[in-house]
Length: 408
Image 1 (cartoon, helix red, strand yellow):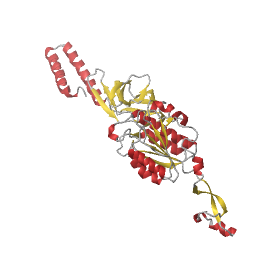
Image 2 (image 1 turned 45 degrees about the horizontal axis):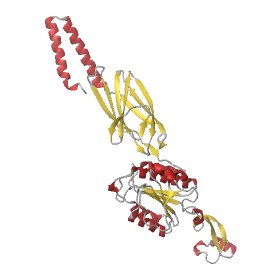
Image 3 (image 1 turned 90 degrees about the vertical axis):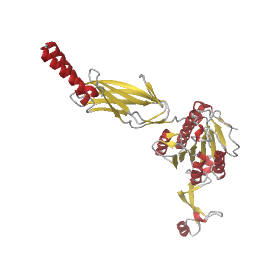
Image 4 (image 1 turned 135 degrees about the horizontal axis):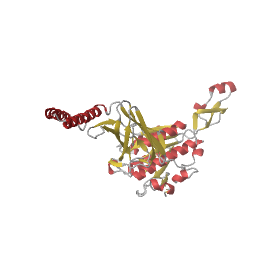
């Protein structure tokens, strides 16, 4: 309150004016005393009840979108009392990555801007406004906290209240066709189909056939053998359950404290999203792992290979929430997760650059029967070390995705 501290002295002044008016029998002084008392009464009324039963709400009409798309933001201020409000000012904190179209915002700091809204409310009135926000970069964003101010008609007293942050808006990364990313649309990660025929999935039973020398005994179908009178083995469909496991490195350099290359990281996130989407379209199981902090999820991103629409949605949501700052290197994450993947699973490792430790993890995965494709996202990163058998692509940062090349 701007006038609360001196209200007692002000009322004493009114009393002095009133006594002077009565002593001097002055109608003018009596009128002035009455007017001052009226003004102080109005100010006191607004100071006490200005923010009472006043609410400020905002909501996104959709909670998810892709980078580059727009969302509609609705804000509403409601005055649920008889006392009208001559002015209400809302200072809303907006992430800089959410561009409010047709509005002028003020710099606030730490990647945020301030949107100032002004309202005038009568008794029991609700005012609603709509804004178009363009999501310029993937991420998980909240508006607020907001500061709501209201005061008396004279501007003498003002009250403030803080409104907590809004619900989260998830902005998915860009998803591009593999040829737009720079990877070949045909066999980008080797001959998955021919490799799949080498492996049998015990959960995909397709019938029985006669035993042939060299068939493993654990594939013998004993009930069919008893019925046929000769050895029968299970006939299994070629396994399509091997699929892909995408490993995204959020470290821009060999040590996480050396800083971030935001352009290379966003390129890597977009490549990861595009590869997951490609695998989903091919009906391949796909998993996603990253060594970054995941907003409201935990320490790292770990989504084991699986199929279905929910897998793609969960992967996109995880990439939207992915942040830097994790002290865990990717090679440590791979050391834990790669041995748990089915033999023959193809790995796609995405990183700005490859140091000795990550190179070692890649070679161990390659030698364990899990073919590796490496995608480098640093335009000026040093060449990758010698990685026999590993297919290597290089893309030139977020703006250079269309110009990826197969590294020699």
